[in-house]
Length: 340
Image (cartoon, rainbow, N blue to C red; front, side):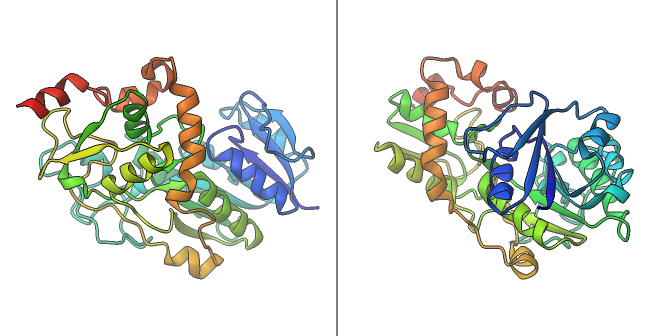
């Protein structure tokens, strides 16, 4: 039996990754800070506690060797070096990165979105050959590039598959964008407002589809960079309609022709230009086919969000979401806009 070690196993993506690998016949060691076990995992999955910052602890988990190391939480070059230092004990690596690494060729990317005229003008769709920001330690994106390059520099000693994900969705998300619609429906809101005519497209990545890419890459070790997204990129209005259908509610969507008016119309998908990624390389190199569509993935996400939000302050439930989108549920401003 081939052995796989999954770092970050208890997270949103790590859970279905462990499940997919175990189902595919791997002997999986699930490493996480708490060392917990998911109810969906096979009984043969071994769980261990791991401090990701401790390189010696990572080496102990790898032990005498593993055929596959899956790293869901590698963030910078230091994390990458923990893996390359063990190249003689690891068969291959699959690491999670982000589409935030891309820039548009004119110096604009995710880091410049808040600047005047700073939103990136990406081609549709964005292929893996698109330029990236420079590596460095300044931002999330520059650190991810630094991490990617450190790992890919080990080619010849260590096969590495880099998966660039976008707007990850599914249960256990620390940043559940779907809460924008789910909470409004739970609160009995019959009207909402979307900027950019509701046509914004910000390509999502199901945690289950990412797990499928990990499973496929594990079976075909190699050095490559692949986008890791769903098969389609629905519009913001389309996402709202799909969530309404799952929850059995009818809500009216009003639209602004342009950007949000303060907090009104702002959603986690409110982008002025499409952010859509090319999945043909994954299809060609790994035979990737999404295991779930966005709409098909929603019932379990909505159920999880409903349970998490009922009777609780959304900021306490999802502090990262509140930090990134502090005025996500500014109902007073919305009501004032409707009556203006």
